[in-house]
Length: 290
Image 1 (cartoon, rainbow, N blue to C red):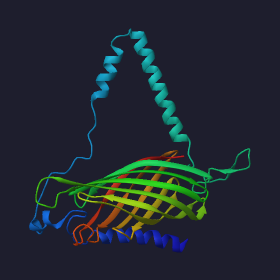
Image 2: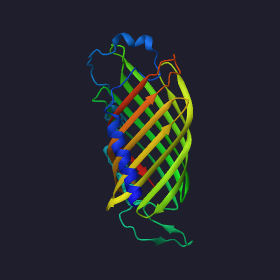
Image 3: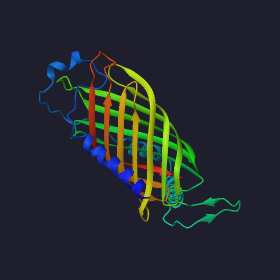
Image 4: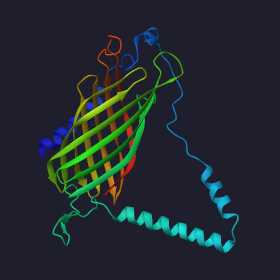
């Protein structure tokens, strides 16, 4: 466990160190559109990640206005009851419950072992600012894992202030699809290695490359876990992605927050000049694990 903790800690340190490097020209964008503006100071308003819709209230009002008070009351009670049942289900199921005692089902299989469950499904969304609000990122992830083997996917959307002095925004999309294998499977810890493909869609080019990663989770106290992940794409473009987070498991619901460092380098594939972005910042999110 000592080497396991050391590797997870090194991922956090490496992610923090990466963000101290000065960013170079925009990844996946030719030099002709940015060289003339390098070195100039620019400040732009933060890019909004998303906006909440206020239409729900009006829809509810219009749908209930045509019925009697009794019908409206029945519908309201039914809706509240369904919502209570949904939240009750989320908070009382899942492999990541606080007790770590072994449970045996009628078929003899072991259940409820925190990080040693025979089958686990996870999904969620997370995001945050990048490089002091000069950019932002949003991740959507999905995974299905057995006792040892599994599949994992993650889609990342980056919105970065344009590097040509304009008030525009550069968008970069990253996609990963991995097969996973757990090296360590314990009720309180899981350590896995991953391999597969990754892709990057930049402002002026797109690439697909080989991807490998290492990830793990470890119980700290009660329902609180420590999570860490490191991912590398060595060619044709270069990507290094490292993150560390704390995750609070409330039944099937997971709340997490941490820090992420990301390096993107097109290795001169676009115009013979290497363009690199070094990004980093805190993130928060929520998900479901069953």
